[in-house]
Length: 399
Image 1 (tube, rainbow, N blue to C red):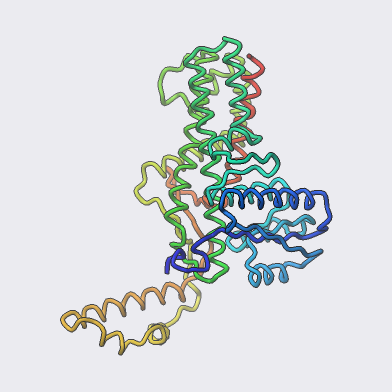
Image 2: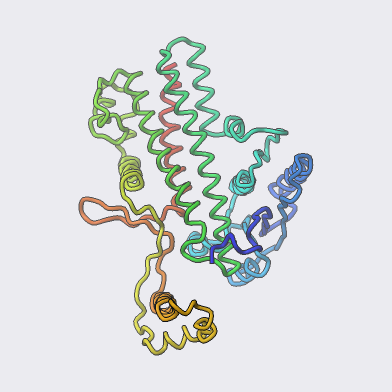
């Protein structure tokens, strides 16, 4: 059953945070004050139903932590002690969000608020702020690129077309940040459905795929806009659209020959490989008809027999009662179809084990690559930010 039909998670307006470590630490005291201010604001705007609660433990082992997450329906764990290793965090990605810095906690809370249509910055609260303004005001790429645009306008060194190009980039960054917030919000809802025991392969898949598609279109598009700005500003001489991409060899070569200070950075294996794979994912989303996330499974070494599966199906519903409710003219066909569907679902559920969830298979010239889009959101944003900041620093130095 689709998760939205369950009353327990129909309105996702309550966030429960478990804090591990000293409840009197500076980070915890700061977030406590910030949440008090937020609570007043939510009351002022008529959204007092949105609640963010915190609980504390001094220390806890991994087994006890998962039990507490399940029993107390905890959405976010703030691991001040950094006792949870990366393997444990990734293994439990679909159960709970585990973060280990105050900055990550602030982002988690703010993305939850964005999902509830509340624009808020914990560190710099502004009453009645619009979502669009939030991304212009918060620290980060959007504000820094906007400041760069106003600097360029004041110097008169850039043409009006170049100013417009920078404005396009600012707007794309704003949309990237918004899309990322909504992805985090729906991932939180997916985790809640998982903890409630009502999650399946379709839980929030429509919403998540919609925002995944937007996210990677915007990431890829903003990098192409940067390439066109650099080509124009540094007079790289590239006129074909197919060459105007940061990862293209000819684009990198012309940057090196013009001594822009960017070419060698673009050429580094880490960022070039990332950009190439980003474009493959964008093209996959744009051109492949099957835009879904599905589980990667393998058959169990000892699958159930047909007799064992039929025994499971027999317990699912009262088949005699079902037969009596089906219209007489279609009774046999409908009965057989329902029975066959139930049999197939039970066979898949019991004869296969899930290796990885929410997987996309990206075709390549030689084979394909497996991609976990939900677990890649922040990884890709980190690479995108580092690359974009490197370009921004160079552009600012030339103003």
